[in-house]
Image 1 (cartoon, rainbow, N blue to C red):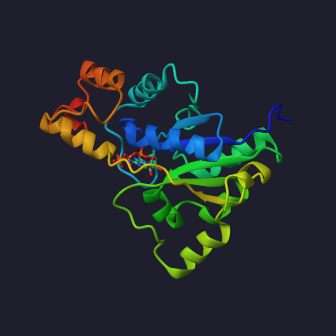
Image 2: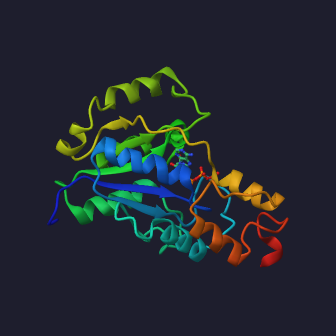
Length: 226
Ligand code: ATP
């Protein structure tokens, strides 16, 4: 039995590194959707993507530094604690089993992730476990790839945030969050070129990146460092 039933929102990502493109839309989303807490969940071996440049420990540390003193956020390390691919479906299934059927759950993604959601493991079943909260992201189509996918989206779309609290899963909330044109790829590339990144991520995270010499060498996949 869970002791509290307020909508619980998870925000998964590689966070290589975490940046304002994660933090600013998430903060705006919290206001729009009435979220008390957002749980950042760094993933371990993302199945659809190349391996991160920073180590797991470094990515965790960067998330911790980014959210220090901000009561909206906390961190969940469950995906980091396994050495197999972290499928969102399985993580949410475990969380649902822990929290019980009455707990409203939500998973936060950016528009780019929504566009590739149909390639995720057991994607159609995700809505049996949670709501999806979608943040805008500049440069990505607002419509899904096929009319069928677009229809699926419209059928599940939440008209208001209120329903996210009343139902435990099953809705897609397209949040009117600010457009933040930042990606971790851009930050890594800027670092490799020796360009400034001050406006793109919290100062404490940047100081840590400097201290660790992260994203600095001309060896983006870290082969020479092994
Ligand atoms: P990379 O450039 O390495 O692919 P990323 O910047 O997209 O990384 P991730 O950690 O892969 O960051 O993203 C985690 C989640 O955050 C995804 O759901 C993604 O859609 C979302 N996200 C990342 N950047 C933004 C942004 N600028 N605006 C809105 N959502 C974002």
